[in-house]
Amino acid sequence: MAESKRVVIIGAGPGGLASAMLLAAAGCQVTVLERQGRVGGRTSTIGGDGFRFDLGPTFFLYPRVLESIFEAVGRDLHAEVPMVRLDPQYRLIFGAGGKIDATPDAERMRREVAALCPEDAARLGRFLEDNRAKMAGLKAVLESPFSKWRDLLSPHLMKALPHVRPWLSLDGELRRYFRDPRIRLAMTFQSKYLGMSPFNCPSLFSILSFLEYEYGVFHPIGGCGHVSEVMAGIAEDLGATISVDDEVEEILFRGRRAVGVRSRSGVHMADALVINADFARAMTRLVPDHLRRRWSDRKIARKRFSCSTFMLYLGLEGRQDDLAHHTIYLAKDYLENLADIETRHVLSADPSFYVQNACVTDPSLAPPGCSTMYLLVPVTHQARTVDWAREAPAFRELALSQLAKIGLEDVRPRIRYERMVTPADWEGQHQIHLGATFNLAHCLSQMLHLRPRNRFEDLESVYLVGGGTHPGSGLPVIYESARITSRLIGADLGIPVAAGVAETVLGKAASLVAVE
Image 1 (spheres, rainbow, N blue to C red):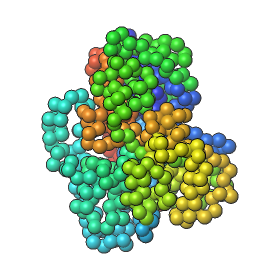
Image 2: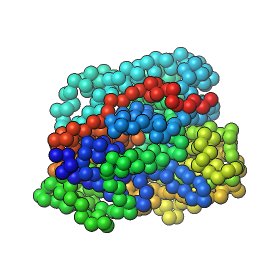
Image 3: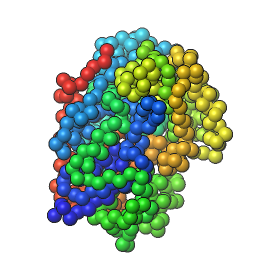
Image 4: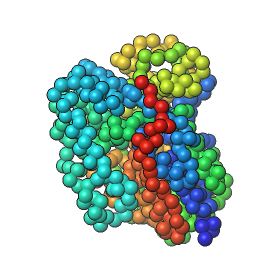
C-alpha cells in the first residue's frame, strides 16, 4: 500500500529533507521540489573563489534529534558527517566590560563566571540542575503534536508546567539565579536563535543555554550546509526524487483538499503535501485566501515575526588562529540595541554581532593560507523606517568597524571574497516574509496549538515542517517537526513511519573530537 502513496514536499530545507528521509524509508513515493539551485534552504552552502560558508545556521546543537532520524533509516549521523565538539563553545565579549570563554567543563565555566561575579558562580550549578529537570519535563511536549487546545491538558504538559513559569520572561527567569546582567546575558542571548529578545522571550527557553552546556556545541566538518547535502543524498538513496531549480507555482485543490502542485517541471499529484517553504510567504502566495480561515492574509498580517539579520560572508587572506570559532559581542547598551530592533525598527550605532571563524577548526572551508569570516548583525525585519538600498553601504562599514571590539583591526585590506545579504535580500531573493529569518516569533500567543499546526488546520492533506510550525525555529526543533509531521502523515495514510529512538550525545562521545 505504501508504494501507491505519493508525497510532495515543497522545499528542501532541513525539515523537508528530514521528512523525505523518513517517508521514503517508509515506502512512500517522495518528490521534493526546491526553488533554488541547491538543497538546504537557509541551511545551505554558498561561496566562491574556493571559500565556502553556511548561509544561515552555523551552530549545530543537540544532535540527538538528527541522530534519531538517521538511525530510523539505518544510517549513522556521525559516520556520515564527522562533527567536532567545541571547547570553548564560544567567546562572549561584553560591551559593558569583561568576557567569558563559555566551556562545557563545569569547573572551568565556574571560574569564568567567578571572574565577573563570584556570587553568581556559586549559583551556576543550581541553574544547570534546574534546567536538566525542566528539559526532562519538556522533552515529551516538544516531541508531540499540538493539534487542538485540548492537547494542553496532556499529562506531559501538566507534568512540565511546574518548570515553565509562563509569567516570567527569559531574563526574569535568570534573575532567580544571577545578579550580574552580563551573566544573565551569557545564559539568555540564545533567545536570538529564535529571533527574540530575552526580555520578552518566554522563560521556558532557558533550556537553550542548558542544552549547550549539557550536550555541546558542534561544528560539522564542511559546515551545517554539508549536513543538508548528506541528508539529500540519503533521501535519494532511499528512493526520493529531489528536483532543484523547480519552483512550485500553484497548489492544486479539490475543495479544501490539496491534490498536487504545478511546478516549473510540470504537475505532481499527491496524497499528502508537505510545505517546508517559509510559512507566511507560502500561504499568501500559493493558497487562495478564501481557503484559509485561521491563517487568512489579514490574520497573518497581525502576527508577530522575528527580527532579521544583516550578513557579511568574507573570504580573507591569512588566518586568525587566536580568534575563537564563535565570538559574540553584546552591545554596551543591550536594551537600547534590542529596542532599536524590536520596537523602534531602526539601525543601532553600536549593534551586537556574531562572528564565525570556522577555519580555526575546519581549514577545508578556504584555500590554503586563507580563512572564512561569517559576520551576522541582528537587525529589524523589513520596515518602512529602513531603506536597505540606501543604508546597506554605510551599515557594511559600521559592521566592519565593529570588529575592532573583538580585536580585529585589519580585516578590510585582507578581503578577497565578499557577499552581503540584507533583510531586503532575505525577503526578495530568499522568499522570507518580512525578511524575518527566524520566522514567527516564539511568544506565548504563537506556541504549541497557537502556532500553525503540523497537520495544517486550514486545509486537508496539507502538512507543515520547519520553523513556522510546532515546535519552532532552530535546527533541533525543525528536525523534530519533521519527525512529528512524518508520523502524522503515516497515521493518516496507513503507513508505519519509524521516527527513531535517539541515543544521547553522551553515548556517542567516543566518536566525537574535543577541541581544547
